[in-house]
Length: 250
Image (tube, rainbow, N blue to C red):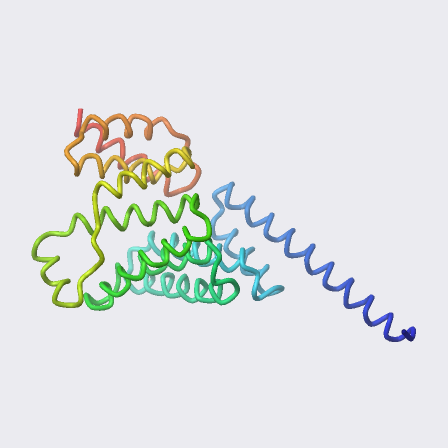
């Protein structure tokens, strides 16, 4: 091997090594910003990492998830739509990077769940069908992926709670897979065992128990919820909602 070729290979190897270190550093910084609840700054840092490595799976998934979360906080429908569309686009890129990734399939399911909130009735039904598929694909790769378990549990809870007129309208547009309140509770309880610090899961579990007529269990879950330490801006909101619900049941 001549000297010029050796120098080229060495330079290329060094560049890849430096790029890898830069990505790792940026991702770590982004995670720290998330822990400090500086979510807009964290999103910017993940985007910076993606500019260096456009197919980085973690950055793609995190940007998608952040857009779903930030979109949920918007009061303007157009702003919501923009965030949710971005979440979907980054999820598509994540799936393209690794179609079997549990995180990629989760953020795709989450993005579709959010888009269903701002879509036409026909589009909403299609998205709702696909949410279940995305969650199940994620769980095929990682059966203990707590976010996907929660997403699937929420799908069962919300679909099983649809009223008669809604179900009739949906049936005319192709229908949905069967859903069960019992399955929702089983899934939420599994999440509680796997990730006992996941605040939103307690709120949804309490709602499911209340829907099932088991107020005693709902109270037990909510009493645990109100004592939990919030880890995000949204956790404060979930705790406040849980406290109000608890007071109504006592």
